[in-house]
Length: 113
Length: 113
Image 1 (tube, rainbow over the protein chains, first blue to last red):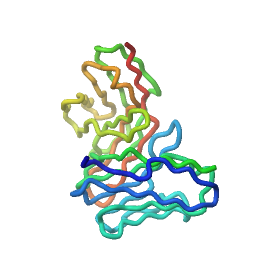
Image 2: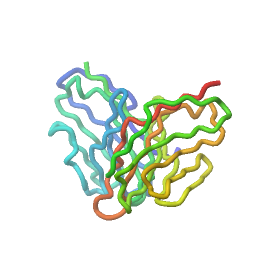
Image 3: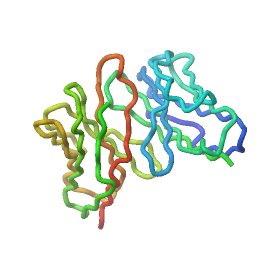
């Protein structure tokens, strides 16, 4: 499968714990995006990378959220000190340029108890 | 990016054409119209996009009015697998501001057997 891969698909954690999600984009794609989606809403843009450079991070929801793409390939999204309001689907997408045709993964669903 | 307005839900009979409207009255001259869909529990899927001219691909047709203030996505022969939330998005594709897509709530299209 050569699509966007996200792991884990499901994560259940207790409030206050840290969680990390991984995204492996399509191999030749230099842009990678993170979104959050809550029930009944459309995906909400969080941040994006061009290669290893994080070009937009002002829309990360709080300083508990951080993302990295150290070698310009896979990316991780970390949420520290999780809260119940962080429960959501976290989506990753990639593309090969500045166009708007993004390829999305299946998402990582987070449940914070 | 300009805002879009879509009906929250629509029904269509299987085998008929599904016509999904979108208003984007504040669209700028350099903004493209993109359509995505999201089947339940999956990541969004790109369908089609256009600037001024009507576009067609293997999935759908996109009709953009001459003043570009509205558009219609047409699924010519809807099947049960087309049941999904459809998002209309307007976006600038060039320059430094070409960041993530801004999703609204979309239209929940239900194909009836």
